Structure formats: C-alpha cells, structure tokens
Image 1 (cartoon, rainbow, N blue to C red):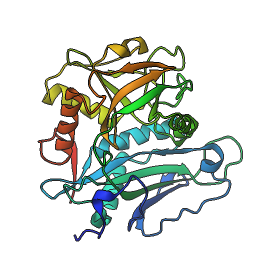
Image 2: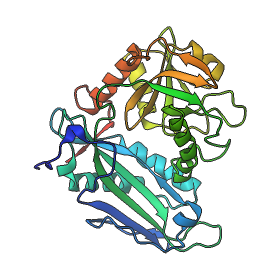
Image 3: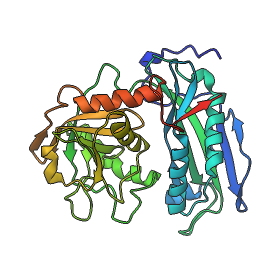
Image 4: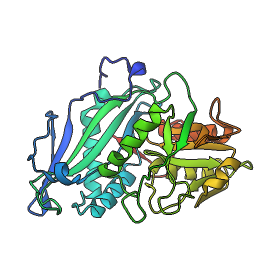
Length: 341
C-alpha cells in the first residue's frame, strides 16, 4: 500500500480527514452490521440525547508501523472492555467487544495509506465513540445510538525533544466520589476544560487533581494517570475508584515488573508524600510517558530530583521498553499486539 504524500515528521496532534470511517446504528434493541463509509458528516436530531444530556462515551488508541513493516494496534481488546464499562454506566447499549475490535481493525485497514511509516515518529490515532442519536426531551436514556470509528494521523508528541511538565494543584475537582471518573465519558472532559484553560493562562501545563472527598490523595490530571518512582526505584501509581483505568499505565506496570524487574505498587498516594518521590510522570496514549519536573501547590514548589531537564532514568527505561514493544523492537507479551492483516 503506497502511503499518502505527507510530511509525517511535521504533523501535529490535530484532526486530518482520512478516507474511511465505520458506522453502526442501534435501533429497536439491536445493533446493525455496520458499514465503512467515506462520509465524515453526522446527521442527528436537534433534540438528540447526546446534545441534550451528554450521553456519549469514547476511546482512543493508535495504529503503528513496526520495524518489520507490519501495521499493528496496541491492546484494542482493553479499549473494547473499557468502552463497554463506560456504556453500562451511562445506560447505553454495549457495542459487542469482539465487534469493536473488528470495527477498529477494518477502519485501520481501510486507511492503510494514512498509517505513518516506521521511524517517522507519527502514528495513526483511532477514535471509537458512541452517542445517543434519537430525540430525547425528558431526562432519560436515548432509545437509539450510533457507534463510529474514525482515524487521523498525528505527529510525535515530543516533537523537538522531551519537555518536562509543570503542574499545579487544582482547586477544582475532576470527579465526584462514586461518580463517573472511572469511565471515558465526554462529560468528564467537558468538566475539565475550564480548569485546563485556566492552568494554561497561568503558565502551567496541566492540573493535578486531588480526591474530591478529602483533598488529600493524588488522583490524576485531566487526561492522564500519574506514575511515581521512589528514591529506591519502586514504581508507584495511585489507586482510586474515580481514576480512569489507563491502558498505558496498566501496561507500564507490567513492563516495570516483568521486563525491568522493578518492584511495583498500586495504592492510595497522599499528596504529602509526593515531595519524597524521585521521579514523576504522566502516562497515556498520546505520549506514553510525559516527565513532570515541577508541581506547584499554591506557591509552594515540589521539584523532582530527576525530570527537571529530561526524563528520569527509570521513566526513560519504561518509555523505551514500552515503545520498543509497540514498534516491534522488543518481544511483546502474548495478546498485546494486534496485527492488521
């Protein structure tokens, strides 16, 4: 498959229309078979449930070209399972997990010319999403839904080199106890927009959110999980019922334990102990790991011994190993790499 004539190395993280997307509709209690289409427009009622009551969930993943020239997707079965959990929480019909993986695979295959070549630093971002599509004026679940998958090529997250982030402790809450923080729903991200725009205006890269109940425990940022490294090399990640279960974070913990032989711990992390960590990173689909150099708590600065100028040594090993697995340079655990034939 001949690739598109694109300056892959200078792509940003923004939408670029590709050739095909997958669409399936839910009506009368069942999903149809779905279809690949070239039409990128969505037509719904002005009173659609998604517009009135934000009934929408989504996922994000990437397709890569490996060193061997294969097109692969990283752990799409976990995205399928997470979307199923999200749908159940918002009283939406679950799109079958096996059909989810199939739809993602078909969409990537249909846009093979848009999958960036190996070594370019770019990837094909894949966005499955679902929303209430029929008219709903009373506060209740929609009766009809649409599931869609589109793709767009995106550039390397660290174009020009790694730049450690500066975070602030936010006065806003990301998610309520027993709320929807553990699912990937559009409404969670809408709530974070004011806080992130405000943080950027004040010169910060992101917000660190504390738990809403006690404001003593670290949760996550608006779009990434935390990963800490102790001074003796233990990898620690926060545990909470209102944290989104990041696929990248879960994968990194396996890499730390099984590939690097590091001790790992998922537990409640109190903000008071953050100053004692040697390294801090944010993990997610976009960057794998972004190093954090400084956290500012209302004027009080916490600077990490490793990470002010570049990634800390443990963070760097985690990043190199996981990206090596994704790109085919390092053998992957069974089931992690889904090959698009």
